[in-house]
Length: 297
Image: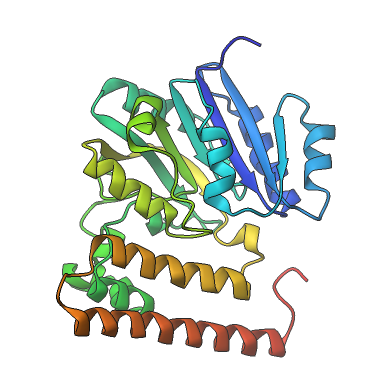
């Protein structure tokens, strides 16, 4: 195989059925550029790597333990030589033209370091995380309580979802979703790979923040669309370890970028709020588990 112009990286932990659909969509709608697909299997116990080897011989397979999303992606990001690399979740399916529209956008403007596409859920609704603003404590609180998700919520409460940016309007955004991130290798070399201090969750927001800090634009290109089965690879509900990782990630992001110096009382309040949300999430998850099996079980 000639040297790829695009490296597509899919980190998978279980969810073999979703990964199959993802790989089939890449077969059905390949990009114009020469591409190589690499699946990094992060400790799957459901036969996922064997399925990839058997049914997708054109895919490069890397096996590792459950080392976390950032660390697993970094196995490829640290060695990539292609001018562009796409991080793709196993619970996505690319639609016709999605890859090419993203590649066209990033190739057209050398100041763009990262491009995201329009993500939709299985119902056809927009996955609002595909274009978002960096969270403030107030906006994050509004988002997680549901107040900021209301259509009539003011911008100060709904800014996490970049509500002022229409879903069909291309343009610069603070951040895109880690389910689909097309990255320029030149920018990757300057910014560095994903922060492995995030085991799972929040690493995409952190990466986007670092791209902006290094002078690289993050762009939302909605002319291409991909399906995102949100939570598909985690069975629709976070495990205890995933819940802890999510909330630790929130604290790490706040501490790194937003925690004001000499405002100990405010910072303590934010950390207590994160701890309270973690406790509530665990309690809700435990109640749901007691009430019945997870969807699909």
